[in-house]
Structures are given as C-alpha cells and as structure tokens.
Amino acid sequence: MTPATSVLLLTTLTGFGYGLIAWLGTLAALGFLPPAPLFLPVAVVVGLGFANAGLTASMLHLGHPERAWRAFSQWRSSWLAREGVAALSTFPPAIAFATLWWVLGPDAPATRTLGVVTAVLSLVTVGCTAMIYASLKPIRQWHNPHTAPDYLIFAVFSGAVLLAAIWALWFGAAQGLAIAALIAAVAGGSAKFAIGTSLTDRSRSSLWRRRLGLPPSVQCARLTARTSPKTTSFARWATRSRASTRSNYAGSR
Amino acid sequence: MTSLPQPLPGAKKLGLVIDLDTCVGCHACAVNCKEWNTGGHYAPLPDHEPYGKNPDGVWFNRIHSYEAGCGSESRTVNFPRSCLHCDEPQCVTVCPTGASYKRAEDGIVLVNTDICIGCKLCSWACPYGAREFDDDAGVMKKCTLCIDRIYNEALPEAEREPACVATCPSRARHFGDLGDPNSKVSQLVAERGGISLMPELGYAPVNRYLPPRKATIAAKPLEQRATGASNALLRMIDKVLSR
Image (tube, rainbow over all chains, first blue to last red; front, side):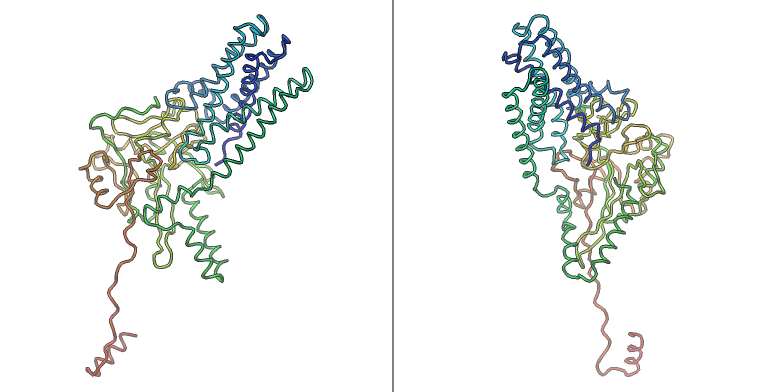
C-alpha cells in the first residue's frame, strides 16, 4: 500500500506548519519569545504557509478537487472531515494572534490567550490527521496505539527544527531551542524504533483460512521445497505462471 | 450523511451467499456484473490496457483462486470477492463528504458519485477490497447489489436478482434477505455452516460464504481378479478384460 505523494506532502508539510505554530503559541504564552515586533508575525506566516502548502498538496490527489469544500460536512463521523475543519479553524486565531502581538505587544493577556488557543488548535489538527490513519482498522501498520502520539511527536519535532532555523536567521543560534529540537528528534527516533518492533504479530489474512479449515499456503511451499529439491525450478516457473494468470483474470491491484 | 442509519424495525438485509464448494472459478459472475453495470447505475466501468501488460479497470466482482492444503488434501478454492454490504461499514463513516451511504431500508451500501471528491479514503477503510476507483470519472464506485435489477419492474420477476447470481452456471451464488432467519439464504447458511469474512474487524459483513465440503470422496475398492478353481474360460476372459 503506497499512499499518494500528495498525502505524504500533506502529512509532512502540515506537521512542519502546525508544529511551528504550536511552538510559537506556547512559547509566547509563557513569555519565552524575544519581543521583536515582527518576529512572531513573520514566523506565524511561515507556519501558515507550510500548513497551506500541505493542505493544497492534499487536494492534488483528489479525483474532483473542485468538490473539496464538501469534505467539511461529515465531521460527526469522519476524521478526514474533522481534520479539514480543525485545519481551517486554526487560521483565524493564528492570524489574530500574530496581529495582536504586533498591535498590543507580546505581553498583552489577549495575545497570550490567543497563543494558547492557536497552539491547542494546531495540535488538534495534527491529532485529527493522525486519527485518519489510526482509525483504519484493516491496516494494522497504522491501526495501533503508536500512530496518534507519533504524529504529534513528529509535528513537535519538525516545528522545533523550523523554529530553531527561523530564530537562528533572525537573532543567531539559540541553544535552548536547539536542545529542545534535539530531544524531540530523539523522541521521534525512539517512536520509530518502537513501532518497528511492535509489528511482528501474525498476519490477519491467515485468519479466514483457519476459519475455513485450510492450512496457511506458506506451509505447502515449504513442504515442496524440502521434499523435492529437483523440481524447484519447475515449481518456481509453475508458481510464477500461475500467479500471472491469476492477476490477469482477477485484475488485482 | 455518512453516519450510519438507525436500523428500521423489520428492515431487510439484502446480501449474497457464495458457495465456495461449488464455485468453479469460471468468472461468469465477474463478466456478467461488468456487462450489466457498465450500462447500469454507475455506468460506465472503464478499463485501462485491457489487452496490455497490466490490464486494469473497474470490476465490482473479482475472483481469486487459491491452492490450499498439501498432497492428497490439496484443492483449489475459488474465492469470488465483492462488496459484503456490511452492517458497520467503515467505508461509509470515514467518508468526509457524505457521498458514501448505507440505505436504512435494505442495507445496501452505495456511493453518490455526484458529490464524491475521489479522496479514496473509503478504499483504505474497506478490508475486503470492494471499492473500485474510476480514474476517468475521478470518483469511487462499487457493487450496488444490482439495485437497478432487483427493484426493476421492467424486468420479469424471476430476473430481479443481481447479475452475478443470475448468471452463475454452478448456482454457487444466492441472493436474499439475510436479516430474516426464515429466508432461503439464511436457512442455507445455517445448514451449511456459512461464515462471514474477518468478523474480528467488527464490520459485521452481511454476505456469507459457504465453506468447501470435505475434498475426498470415498471410492469403492477396485475389483479383484478372480482366483481359485473356478471355470478356466471365465478366468481367461477375466484376465483379458482386466488388462
């Protein structure tokens, strides 16, 4: 199963964008950002730019991009619709947050409150994206407890990297931020390692064979290889030609 | 609306019962399905490179042939695959637009191709591979249980069944109301120990599959050549005929 390139772009670019905005909102609320009047507005625009690029990319794989507006309607049942709603509803508070920073200043309670709101909505958006995949029961590589936290960890990591880069361009290197990005990188790496080791359980596809009282097909292949080594090349040829006939008929993808 | 409908009291649960014992893997169901549906509800069903190296296209019915078992226990199992019209279809609930829906009155799962955006998420949510994307139209299509046959008053009543069922030469496919325990199909399922596919995923599929019966049939032992002191002529005839 290979997701469309546009979906890969969506998940990584929105991870960068919303991750950055989540960092900006949180750090601004805590008063950790330098009070330069233009820094935060520019950084928020960069974050929204990444998010927008990801959302636009996601429309490229649609059969009918012009109908994409319909995808907001089924938020009661669909994580994809919820993602769309959350993604768009992050934009107004983020823009208001950047504007208030510029107009009222970083320390105004309204600025800090909007910073928290923006950060929360950003993480909710990433969480909804994660749940699109985590909720797909047939795909065990995604339908597991790793998917949702991993998306959040990677968004926090890529947001930290992006913020460290913008900060470094603006004010010079920031040690604290670099350490935070490094910690997030280690967390991301550990998450990747954890999911790799958890996916070794038996394939679900063999379940229905067992229900029908049929042995798993692998058994037969092993038996053939062990008992008649001389016919292996013929068996291989036969298997191959059979497989090709089957896929021609079934048209399986 | 992609939220699932409240089940109506006494509503039908239309579905198929497929006999894996008598299915001979002839693909007639797939062909007749294509034939009907390419002019039916979701017409057309396009093909790409049908005679090329990688033939592909929209087929609501696909048949997979498996070799199962080893030695004398080995057998071929032909496995026709189509939409199971699940009671808990995640393909419906994941749809962001409301294009996918399940009918309350008979349980048939359909797509409104006029509002489908072609995001393909439903095809990822279906564990049975029943969703078929039409690249030409940019929308998802699927088995309709021949909704345009089973309620079609222009057809003689005997023909108001899905195209795959109507055409099956070994009568391996049966259509009916699986919500009614007294229907013919429900009784067939009960009698043959019909199973549902991957019930552990919780989709509550409506279609049922009848498992293959035992493969070997006990045959009478071969006749032994007559021995002993019987008629010499008969012994000679037996020897010639036994050759």
